[in-house]
Every structure is written in structure tokens, then in C-alpha cells.
Amino acid sequence: MSELFTRYIHLPPRIQEERHVGPLGRAGLKPVPRIKGWHRAFQPALEVADAPNCYLVRLDLPGVRREDLEVTVQGEELVIQGCRNPEPGHEGPWRGERGFGNFTRKVQLPEHVDSNRVEAVLNSGVLTLTVPKWQPMTPRKVRVGHQRRFIHFGS
Amino acid sequence: MSNLLVHRPTSLRTPLTEGLDPFTSMNRLLNWDPFQEMFGMTFPRSLSRLSESGMALIPPLEAKETPTSFVFKADLPGIKEEDVDVSISGNRLSLSGKREAETREEGETYLTYERNFGAFNRTFTLPELVDTDKVNAELKEGVLTITLPKVPEARAKAIKVKEIK
Image (cartoon, rainbow over all chains, first blue to last red):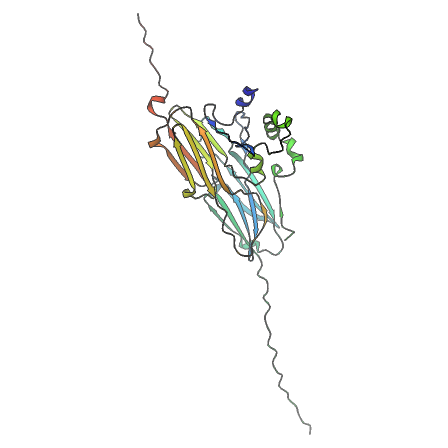
């Protein structure tokens, strides 16, 4: 039985992860069977925040280069797609849980956004997209003046 | 706001679709713990489930062993270098740190969140001693790479076989 478990351990065979047994059970990631030429798919985590003036869309894209990333607005959809390639010099007997490959995430935009002014910043593996909302018309006070009376007294 | 729709990947949807992914099914089978079943423990089996559900941060990690060194890589997006702590004692490598969420502004509400924040700690036992003075750790574009050269005595050395006539 133990052989079955160790065969599929996710790290190189001689490196062991210390698994803490606590109230939550065994810590650490589940072992992933490693098939040659296969790796986990990369699925970036996404977050959408609703700020007063804009929507903030954040994605975790560690190790994704700017040139491998494409952000488009297709109709009412914000599409973030790209490819996560292993770093140069990644050859060798790597084993682990990191995923690579193509990814696509889509966010349906509400109607009241200005999709022409979407800003994207990639910083230390986090992509932040700022989707500005249409500035609501602030109620403007219209002064009501006194109309001058022109009273013409006849004849 | 309710018309803002996020397309979720299959892995984050209901467990109903879980069976379609051979890797997930395989994982579940390999992680089956008979004792857990017998004693009816209802704790989550491993933290990875917590991580997937957005409750705990476990950075995905990768390792390799070469004849001269051990190399570790971890995905740490949005983590500042001062928040990562790499320490070695003997043959134990400990990687810990914390990831803080971006500052939340007044009037900001979250519509969807899959990103995990908090503290993490992963410890590994290496089969050999490493040269602690030459350990190199660098963080680039959210990927941490730790290179641990083996001590010269532990390196694999080819021994020439002499033929005695």
C-alpha cells in the first residue's frame, strides 16, 4: 500500500515533504501522478472587485511574460488569454504541482463600463485590469432666476 | 452588478464535473484514507481542497535534483521579497511567507474571488547536506527559484576503474 503512495509522490523521490498532521488532516498538496510529457494545466485565479469608479479584475499570472499575454474586449466580454511557458532553462527532471500551457478567462462586462479605456498592468506576477465605469451624470443644479417682467401697459 | 458574469473553469465548478478530469479522480483515489472512513472523520482530507476552495494558501511548487544541486521553484504571485523566508537547518529546507491582499479601498465590494491570501509554510527534507553559503534564492515575475548546491562530499563522483593485469 505504501508503495502505491510513494510511487505517485509529487516531488523527486529523494526529497520528502514534511506533512503536518493536525486537526485539518494531512497538510500539503495531493500527489499528482506524473506522466511523461504531461503537466498540470495552468488556470489562473481571478478576482473581480467593484470599486466606486471602476471594476478591478486581478489575475495571478506567475511567470507569464507580457508578450505571451493578450487582453481583448470582445463585445461585452473581457477576455484574458495567454500561454504560460516554462522559464528558459527549465529542462530536466522537474516534478511538482506547477501548471503550464494555454489559458483563457472571460469576464462578462456590465453595460455601464467604458471598454475603450481598459488599463492593464502586470506586476510581479499579478495582472490588474482597471475597467472604468461610465461616469454617472452628477445632478447639476439649474438656477431658476426671476423672469423679468415686461409688462406693457397698453396704449 | 448582478449582470457581471465570470466564466468559471471546470475545476472550480461543482464537484459534479470532477469525475471528468482523470487527474482529479486519480488524486482522490490515491488519497483515499481507510482510517478516515472507518472513524468517520469529517475533516477535510488535505489542505489542497481548502486551497482550491480559497481558504488556504499553498503555493504550487516544483523541484528537481541534479548531480550537483537541488532546485526548487514556487509560484508566488504578488508576494514581496521581504515577505518570503527561506531557511535551511541541516538538511531541512523551510519555505514560509505571507501574501497580503491588495489594499482595499472605501466602497469596494468583491464580486468573485478565487485568489488566496495568508501565511504558508512548507518544509522539505533533503537526502543530503547542502552548501548553505552558496544557496541562491531569487524572485522573478512571481516565481521563486531556490538553488541549493550539494556539499562537495555529497556530489556524485565518477570513479575510474583501473584494470590490473
